[in-house]
Image 1 (tube, rainbow over the protein chains, first blue to last red):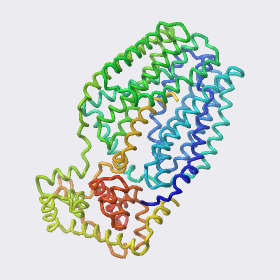
Image 2 (cartoon, each protein chain N blue to C red):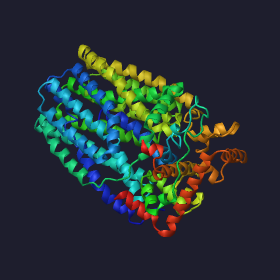
Image 3 (cartoon, rainbow over the protein chains, first blue to last red):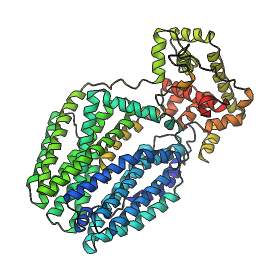
Image 4 (cartoon, helix red, strand yellow):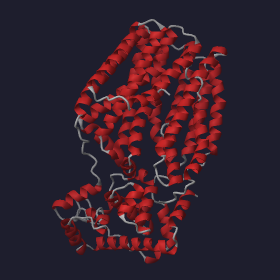
Length: 490
Length: 132
């Protein structure tokens, strides 16, 4: 209705282009597939890999909230650019590293990059779509395209990184990454950032967090699904973080790391496609997934064949993606919509918190007993996930979302339902009163209060005055919409 | 990758679904906080709990010039402004606004109540929330 010109999708595409170029370039982190190989070369063992993973897992949740605030109050694009700078510094520092300590520092700087970039692109795309088209309908399509560009870049960089490492050196891939990310910054600089900001969100941050937290611990069902999502996430993270150690143990050639990593990364996309085809509510399907994941984890503990190990990791990663997505859905269904985003980011944070000790123990165990032994740790975690999954799926049948989020208005209605209305409740019901949407009984109480309260009479008459003047705006100029839209954009 | 991956999965499912549905969009903009700051009402220990601590200040008509109204409108969150313009400026019916925004009549009223209050706070000088 607002500015739905026919040209909107085309200008939208043109406007989002530099952003997508930036996202693609920023995804070309060439050293990722051979990172573990390089780390082994400069003196890492499994225990120090665990330490690095833990240090790095600690940085991300710490910085996520400040980065969100920075993005809202300052500029989302500049937060992305800061993230890119952190990625450049981290790549350079990593490439220059000759010992464990400097590399751990590089990994922590990389944590800054992830904290700054996670979710930021999503909200940039969301606001741009809203600004260009006046509605969020095209959001799904554009975020899908942006993700496709990003995953394409991941796969490409996995393959290219492996080849590059084979013919030059592992160290070289770090240095090549730096200028590519520098080019990504140019993309973000050329992007015309949306000016719409979400003032309402800031006001409610604290109460929102409190409400989210209360919901998370209020019911056993929610807590169980939350743990399921977190542990499934933890396992995925463990595969991506420690999986290459198996290849290192078997002294696989560098060029193999590329396709291996590409296959591992592509399980994310494949899982997303598969999930719509499979019905994870069915007992048989759950049983198959559990058996597959257990078998894969145990193979990681027993097998010494490169092909079997790689296949086992890919199967395990894929099953975990499926379970993770399903856990996300269960979580989604278990909480009221107003706090869903908060709860799922809570699951993300919980994953990081759990991953910290897990990574330390995993690394230590792998060092003491060989990486194969750690396969048993994975198997144990798979058992926990399986039990939680079975119980959650069974409990979720016919479950309705828990009742938690009582808005101020709901409270007002509750109070007004059985006693006199006070001013605090009246102000929540003004729009309903003016729209004549209150029940006759509530309307009577509303008017009763009004007749005896000067404050509320003033309040209501001011609201009416504002509405009358707003109506006048359309007479003075027919195109308030366009002007408003322009004012918000300029 | 790495840490980001499990997060991507959860975010993907959560966002994909909640932003996809319009209810999710609405709930994003509609926090469970009260319309008017709780501070403006007396608390339980005071003589008149839940009644105005201080009556709303007068709103002089001259405060409501078209320019000031437009400036105030520009401060609203996008969705709120959109609903307010459709309903209060253009005077469209709730059904029409439902078709344009996907919000139910009840959701519209909740948004309108907040949006009008935000406008009022923007326009009434020395109103509590904007002063603090």
